[in-house]
Amino acid sequence: MSKRSMSKCSMPMRVAVAAGLSLLAAGCGDTGEASGGKTLTVFAAASLTESFTSLGTTFEASHRGVKVRFNFGGSSGLAQQIGQGAPADVFASASPAPMKQVSDESRVFARNRLVIAVPKDDPGKVTKLADLAGPRLKIVVCAEQVPCGAAATKAFAAAGVRVKPASQEQDVRAVLTKVSLGEADAGLVYRTDAKAAAAKVRGIEFPESAKAINDYPIVALPKAPQSALAKEFVQLVLSAQGQAVLAQAGFEPASPG
Image 1 (tube, rainbow, N blue to C red):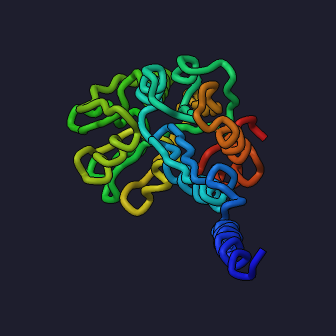
Image 2: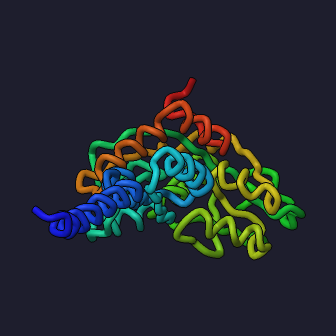
């Protein structure tokens, strides 16, 4: 073979080799499937906003290319969305009842209790749960079908208090917003929510809250698009690291002690 013909053959070979090296350098051997490029979708109770957002950042840092997308809201509404086919990988509920609509395989990862939230200047002069029955006070609570509303009903029953709320909201953050804006004299929210909004509201503990403590279950959904990542996120929440984040937010451990 002539030198000229050898040159013609070697040119495309050099190009192919160069192209292959370029692809390897660009990560052709480490595809998006292997390195990430995935989205983990987590449906979670509104009261988990701060703690789960923090855990989502931690999860992303340890899973290159993975994005954690949250849908926070009332647990009952989230369960309904999942039941109607909304794509989700993980569901974390503020009580077992909405979880039962979705899965029987969940695990309780934390507990939460109610406090009375009042604006910083406390115009209603609220000190105890019985004060919320005052006819001149504007009280807001969660709707009974959502966990914070069901817990409020139990707390009022335990105290023998009858309250006529000015409004019933679809999640605890809506109650918190009305109180923080001064649109209500008081509202029942979770301890964690009052702590997160400590600059705007004051949380008042009351003994009857012990009768209405909510267990928070979590599950990697059986038809999760990202089933492996879903299980890993659940493990993070259950881990010592996850439990420390939840404790800092004001949650109680799943098992007392």
